[in-house]
Length: 173
Image 1 (tube, rainbow, N blue to C red):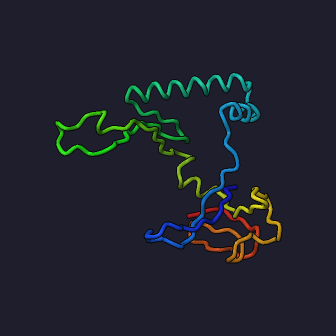
Image 2 (tube, rainbow, N blue to C red):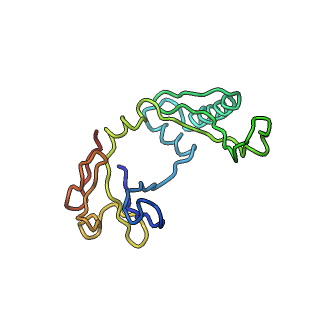
Image 3 (cartoon, rainbow, N blue to C red):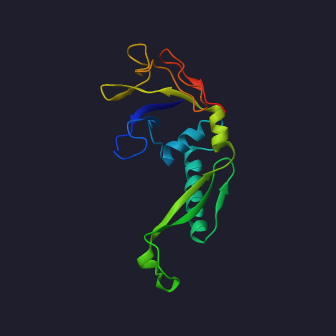
């Protein structure tokens, strides 16, 4: 379930000033060790240590290949590539220098297969997150969604507000 909160744009001069948008709530970040542990419990004959070793080696190999100028595609995950972070443009080609015009490189990832937005939208369920005393609560304390427009969830597909509190529905096209 993807939980979200509503935030208001408060940047004066922004064309969307005062409007509200949904922002996903990240409840936890799973590190490589926890991912290996999780994977080992999915009917795997491999231990957490073996899985973590393979993932660690994979990460190192991906980095090596990227630094060699190659892209790396992992089906149903992403195509990893590097991009250049430019500082400023040069007026003429002969004025361009790495130190003056480039600030570094960045990792880029484009979703593939099952992680593409089209696939995620078919499987995702959205629910408005409720905070009690600054902490994320799994269920609203008052039975409503805490949403001043009546609670419930919204679908990006134009499904609108479901009315009532605590409802959730799949995201569709």
